[in-house]
Every structure is written in C-alpha cells, then in structure tokens.
Length: 127
Image (tube, rainbow, N blue to C red):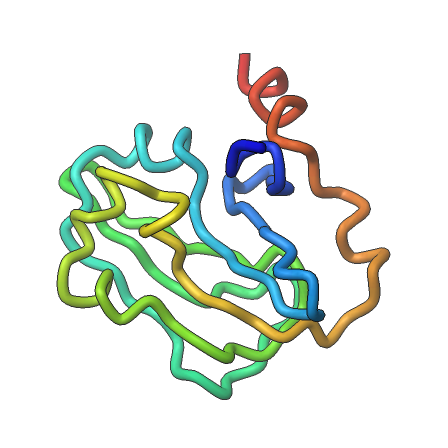
C-alpha cells in the first residue's frame, strides 16, 4: 500500500496519517509543496504545545510566498521533524515519508476527521 493510500487530506492541503495508537503524523501534500515552489524557511511549534483543529501550528516560506499551516485535528505536539528546521528544502524532495512536519497525540474526537478526504478524492477536487 502506498503512502498516499493511507492518508487523509484537508482542503487547506495538510495531510493526516493515523499511526494507529491515537497519534498522527501531519505534513503538507505534494500539491501544496508544488504550489509553494522552493522552500526556504519552516517554523514548527514546540513539543508539548496544544492546538485545536484549524489552528495555525506552523509557518512555511518559499521563494514565492509565505503560508500558514493548519492542524487538521486537535492535538498535542509530541514530536517535530528537526531535520526540516535545518534543511526545509528537503520538503521539495519528499513531503511524505521524510518530509512530515509534526506528530501529535489527538485530543479531539473522531468526528474531527469527517471533513478530511482520502487522497484520491483530494486529487479529484483539485482538478
């Protein structure tokens, strides 16, 4: 099964991967990265911070634009991808397996995922 078959995507182009133990990996979709172009800066939150669904939890800058990144579900940050803080351009190479942004412990309920789409549906909506 490919990585994109396991993720859910938000309308604001974040993805959510269920790690199976009430923790989730969150990142930006390939579409978002393509639209941004060359990434030059990434600011991630601190471990332990809590956010509600829809809150801005990170900021990303490319040669084209600066954007806010929103949390697709409520959660507490349990890990950040330190490698990307030092080398944000790695997102341009692989935004999924190596280019995840944060891992969270979910604090909301399952219904928060109701507006998220499977990757195939997300891709169709972009067309």
